Length: 404
Image (cartoon, rainbow, N blue to C red; front, side, top):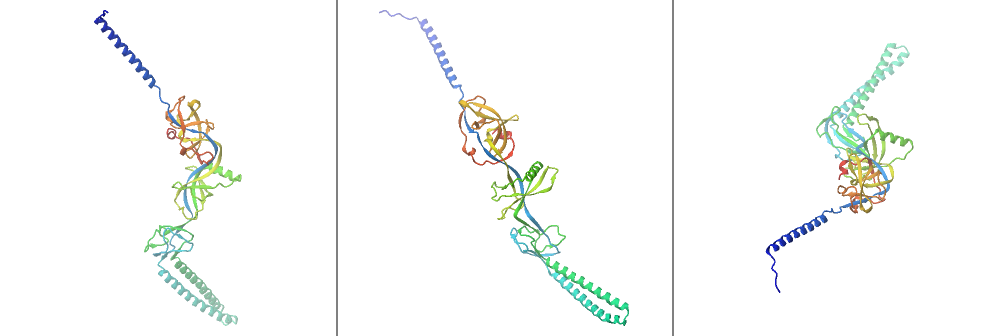
C-alpha cells in the first residue's frame, strides 16, 4: 500500500488550530468554575422566639442611707478631756458613758456653792429668830412698827438669798454632772473628733462624736413631682402600700423589705424633685449612714407583654428596627416601638406578634429578603417563660445598644 505523505504546511496549520481550540476550552471551563464560586454562602444567625407573659413594672431611684436619729455629742461645759469610755464604731446604749472631762474644777465649785448656801441659811435662821421675838413686842406696842417692818424685811431677804444659794448649788452639781458625757440614744457611735487632753466646751467648733440610731434606718430618694402627685392620688384612693426592695452597691438585694415613710415639706425648684424618706429594718446593723443603693418598687403589671433581647433592636435615624426570620428562612425588616426595659430584654409595645422569630445574634450580617440559616439563641440570654421578669424604667434603647 502506498503511503501518502502529508505536506509540512498542512501539519503546521492543524497544530495552530488545535492550540486555539484548547485555549477556548480551558477559558470556558474556567468561567464555569468562577460562576459556581460566585454564589455567597448562607449566613448563620441566632434567633429568639418572641414570648408573651405578664411582667411586673418596676421603678428605681438612687438612695442614700441615713440614721433614723443622728445625735451630735458635744461638751456642755469647758474642760480638759481625760477619758474616752467607748470603742469607736460599737453599738452603745442610751445613758452609756462616752467621755469624761476633768471634774476637779466643778467639784470645787459645788463645795463653794454649798458653803454659800450654809452662810445664807444661817442668816435666814437669825432673821427668822429676830422676827419671832419682835412680833409679840409689837403686839404690846413695846417696839415701833418700823422695827417690825425691818425685821420682816430682813427675814424675807435672807430667805431669798437661801433660795439663790440653793440654785447655785444645783447649777454647780449639774455642771459637775456634765463632765460625764453619755449617749442620749441607742445606736452606733462614730469616730471621736476630740483626743484625750484636748480642751473642749460649748465654744468648740467640732462635736465630740455622733451616735446614730440605725434600726430602722432611713434611705432618702429624690422623686419627680409627677411621681409624687401620682403616689398621693393612689394613697387617696386607698391603694395598698407597696413593699420596697433595696439593691446594695455590690448588686445584692437586701433581704428586708422597706416602706415609704414621709415626704419633705418642699419641692426643689432647681431639679423639680422632692425628697422622700423610706424605712428599712436593720436588725444586724449592716446598713450604715452614707451608703448608696437603689430603691426598687413595683408600680404596675404589664399584661401580655412581648419580650425580646435588647441586642435584637437596632436604632437607625430615630427608628427602631428588628430582623424577622419568616417563611423559607427569609429576612424581613420591621419597625417596632420599644417600651419598658426588663433586665437584658425589652418589652415591645408595637410591631411584633407572639411566636415570631427575631434575629438576636448576627443582625449586622442580614438585610431585607436574604436567606439565613437560623439557630436557637443562647439560653443564658433567653428568659424562661413564666419567670418573673423585673421591668424597671420605660426608655428606648440607645444607638450603641442597638448596634451591638
